Picture 1 (cartoon, helix red, strand yellow):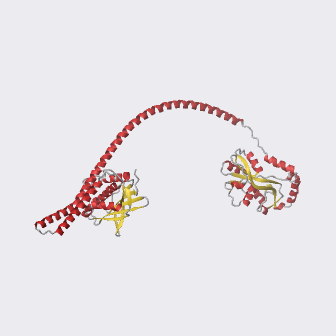
Picture 2: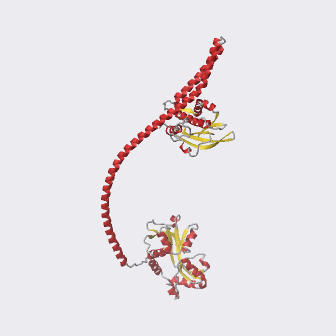
Picture 3: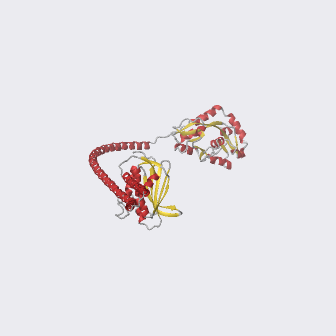
Amino acid sequence: IIVNKLNLKTTNIFFKSFDEQIKSLQSGKSDIIFSIGESESRKKFGYFSNEYLKFPISIVTKKDENFIENIDEILDKKIAVGNNFTAHNLLKEKYPNLDLVLVNNVEEGLNLVSKKEVFAFVDIKPILTYNIAKFEFKDLKVSGNSGINFPLKIMVRKEYKDLIPIINKTIATIPASEVTNIVNSWNNVKFQTSIDYKTVWILVFLVFFGAIAFILRTATLNILNKKLKYTVEEKTKELKYLNENLQLAIDKKTKELLEKEAILNQKAKMAAMGEMIENIAHQWRQPLSVISTISSSLKIKKEMNILDDKEFYEALKNINKTSEHLSNTIDDFRNFFSPNKEMNKFYLSQLIKKSKDLIKSRFDKFNIKVIENIDDIEILSYQNELFQVILNLFSNSIDVLSSSQIENKIIYIKIYHDENNLYIEFLDNGGGIKDEFINRVFEPYFTTKHKSQGTGIGLYMSLQIVTKHLNGEISVKNDTFIENNTAYFGAKFTILLPIHLQKN
């Protein structure tokens, strides 16, 4: 309209992007842009007319999105806009921190929305509706306005400044009704598409052959289903038969395992009893010798008539004290093999002392020093069970150290605790366990000792007691410990136990 009213001769140039169009005017390759928004950066190389139309910057999203009343509602989402478009400049001016995805043209922006790579694309509504229809984006819609208006103006390069007053006068002469018709023509643009009958026939044939294939497949599946049903019934019968026989085999194997476990337990008990009897024999040898010596001395002095009352009563006192020690040893032996499985509270220091007292003669015989670093804590557990484990660890260390040529033979016991658990570390300086054996020491019947020294079930039973009866853990590794500024190397057994054992 403006070109006709001014009787101008123009040559239209088409660009791939709006940014190219701006740069063309700036470089002097083109002279005028008929639809553009005014900005401070553009004023540097051109002049603007009065506005001739005003459109809101609208928002395009996928069709399933809700109406958007204002762009503030979607500032946290990815928004695309044309690079150097007026909409781009207006949004940057109002929202300087907004992270925008810049595109070269409208089609590219709409395509990003369609692929869900961005949430929305913004531009003036006529441009959006025109391009949605032109490129057939059937999954897109104009979902709302940004709240920012875009006044359209005409821009000429600075050499044609004199055109601006003429253009402004021409704009003023355009009737409002004609402006309305122009706006409506943009908003109601439609694109007609022709029918491709070749494609239609291809689709018809595809549907026809697809239907035939579906019918054949359905018939084939019905036949296969019948065969499969028969096969499943036969296999179910076979499986039922196998399950019945498998259960019998499992029951038989379970019975065998229980019998083996019972035999192992009995052997472990007998081995422990033999070891306890040996310990008691060592313990009784000295007290019996004391009693024998005292009684012989009394007899001789009585016969020689040189026994006075004081010496007589002192001798009886020593005999009673020694007899009491023998009695306590018998009590320890009886308690060790007591079937009583009641939990009770006890102090670990007392349990360690009782264990040491029972095998003190073996410590003395092989000149073994026992060093303790113990948190004296009271625990609730099975005392006799833990007593058996401690005795077994002592015996293993004694066996190792007794055959060693080490001068300073040491057993080191460290006991500490946290809020819920107790830790017992049991170390000696016997040189440790060979790497090829260390992972097998808890296996039944496994031993590195001579047959005369062990059965190979002591550590296995210790593992069973700790894990099954005391609800704990036991492990072994080779480690180094420091005593009196000297480093010693040997096996380290670690036992973890709950401070308060819960009855299972």
